[in-house]
Image (cartoon, rainbow, N blue to C red; front, side, top):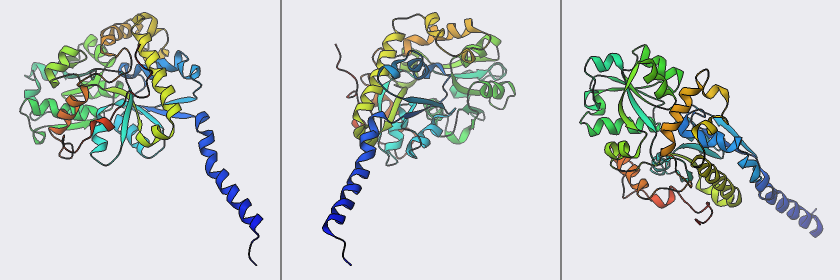
Length: 337
């Protein structure tokens, strides 16, 4: 028995409504953002935006999750488990070389904010620059992470081939500190407030400083935009309103950072960010504030520096293969005044 015309029309209408439902709900859907180490100062804008109420002001429901290594957060994004990642911009270029289209829609830092620390013991034994890395074990947060990218480049630039040293994923914070103290790594790349902690205890010394524009330009040849919010290009295109609200909420936070003191900012972070030494955290924060953008926009020339660094040792990343215009956009930020 053939179905009636009315039955067919009803079925078609139900199908159309079912297909439209996710789109109708998209504006109110919760957004999950994975942060590559939520208590790192380089990623402070994530928690700060939440604490300031800027997500709520924009009508967004945002859940922040923490993942110590940026490469793991990246994998969660590609799998569709999260809608955004607060991590390093360089992942967008690396992913494009692998056929994945991801873009930064808000940029937090003009420089990596990373420091290559050398243990005091290794420094005393002659480890004075990256040229001395041969035969050493160097710590990174995770293999395939931005600390991996940068460590390889810094060693290569000093004439040390990747076969001449070892990379060991040691995470960040306490696990990094333990790796240095136990001599499992002789040097490693980490961020604030871990840097200030290790300098205060005397367990490590600065080998390469990427917290300042001057230090970054000297080591990498230009500004290296790093901490950012990146999303899949297809998600941003399908959720333009949410993407715009997210980007603009972060832009408000960047303006807040540049108009408030380290002490005022420290009052907004959870106590476990600084533990029993709030003064040390404030000191680390003061030294880090200049690295933040003031408006969440991509700094001019930055993407080209990142591409140059990655292309040095990653065969798939070559300038002729990468379309930088698809790795970031300022389009979701409000027009500059």
